[in-house]
Image 1: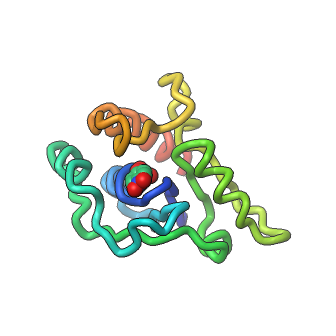
Image 2: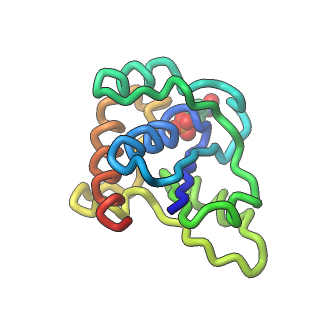
Image 3: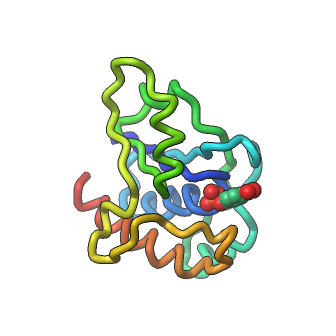
Length: 143
Ligand code: 4NP
């Protein structure tokens, strides 16, 4: 199963999702990307890395890249962190491609959340980690 996580900058939410899911499902082939190219080549945002490392998730090897249309053919499942990310991904879908694109929060319906909050703006890195862990647990039950 090849899964791509997508957020806006690819330095907070989607690399964290990748790092959390790879702990729970080490056999899955995972990657993450940003709808924007603002942080291409950068490691995850330092405060995000610190909050993740406090829970044992080492994100230091990850580097940001931008989502591209050819990702639709490379992955079995694309997971967006919020509705804007999902719309940005869908806008690049090649004609005839049927790769599913889902919101990460669909895997944690009990949370009541409709999006993974962007800690770059909220500054609440633990809130985002809590929800990502819940979504990751739901996701792996479907693999
Ligand atoms: P992310 O958070 O989409 O979870 O990586 C953001 C990081 C940086 C910016 C926006 C969102 N930015 O505007 O630079």
